[in-house]
Amino acid sequence: MRLSDVQRKDVINVYDGKMIGNVIDINLNSDGKIDTLVVEKKVFILSFFSNKNEVEIKWNQIEKFGEDVILVNMAVNN
View 1 (cartoon, rainbow, N blue to C red):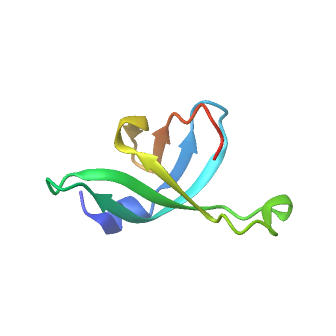
View 2 (cartoon, rainbow, N blue to C red):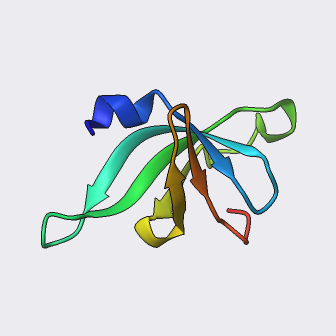
C-alpha cells in the first residue's frame, strides 16, 4: 500500500464513531517503520477557531485498514 492510497481514506474513530479527518503525512521511527499517521482534522464550525488542526495516531491505535476508511481506536480526544 502506498501513502497516496492511505491519504484517500477517511480516518474514523471506533471509540465514538466520529470522523477524525484524512491522513496528510506519516512519521517513521529510527528503524524506518511507521510510528504515527499525521491526520488533518476535519474542520467543523466549533473547532474552526482552534489552532490544533492535526492529530498524530500511533500505529498501535489502528484497528483496520478498510477499502474506504481507516478505523482507529482513540479513547481520549486530542
